[in-house]
Length: 345
Length: 184
Image (cartoon, rainbow over all chains, first blue to last red):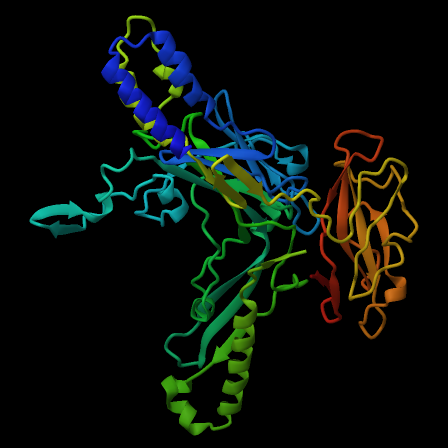
């Protein structure tokens, strides 16, 4: 190809110099048509990524085998749609609500086309720009960091300003959510003065609100950025401050759309090219940390500091009680979280 | 990216502007190797080699869509032992069109039974059709889905089979909670 380009350049230069009145027919048939024919076009099980520096030829490795949760996409009349090959959590395929929140959910087994939404611009500012896309021509946003080169101020992220026209990148995450019961802990101070000695009621309540609302079936969710579930710290659990979301989530895939060169806005059009970064390749099992208790555990009532602590000096026998409370609190803290885990099956 | 088709001219058009664009367009034509692709350039042309996955992936507990009221299950191991219902010499697992839930799903499940000591009894491990992926009649019986048959709103037939398990499995039982854990 390089030799072809070189020889064509010599031919062109000679032709233009010798014959300014090059015939349109010669130009079209002898020069442009061979160039058009030199463009690769993807056939079965192959893809071609066009870049400013060449055409990257890829063969589709999924020949004969497509893993669970594989995401494919296409442009429809009114936007981009994607489809997820059914995967399973505890043997159940997720449900998805494709229209509005109030619309009935459909199972992934029906192969629904899901409208993409909430694409986010990936500029390297709020989230890292994958090096793969940098090589394809996406540039990081200006960082406001300047260096001075020979008295000229240069933005470090604009150093390839004149190399190739820029391309833009947008992304959208697809993830799974599984509802589960939660533990809500609550601390009630019954007698802050300490006169009676009853100071703290520690209530742990088993809460199935979210579980009852959305059901046990896994749900496919998408749009914007995936936010992992944060596990509460021991301190948060003890203080009863943490609000458990009542679900576990796992990232399935990140879809990227890459613009043609010289795109001005982060608004995808059918000319933008799909890339996907799958995060999940196999079916999953899921379990919450605890088995649902039949009744809520009784509150833990802690007596401390009779007469504002003076009584403690009087009764050494209280020490054994304090140790018992300590054990009970530790036990409660260990069960006041119910975050679940996903694993491959 | 320049559209090469835009470089075609009509009689009387100037060629020079198109020629300048052509030089840029030519830069985009070299073929570059993608992942798993090797391009060897020779004087007589370029040789393209690709790492192709012609056979695909099979994995454990392989099954195809049933054509009769039975299904054969490929090799698979539970706690390093192959159940009697799996493998090339095993009998086919019988299927029934009645064992479907309201949404048109039916599972092919691996069913294990634990003894009083909580250990898995390999002789009682079997593969059966069920209308729920893991619910069982007794606490000592544990089930894990290997595949699901989905026929949707159709009332007859076995529909399409989707495989769930692709790996050999292990099983443990927690007697205190009555929970069965299957993992790879």
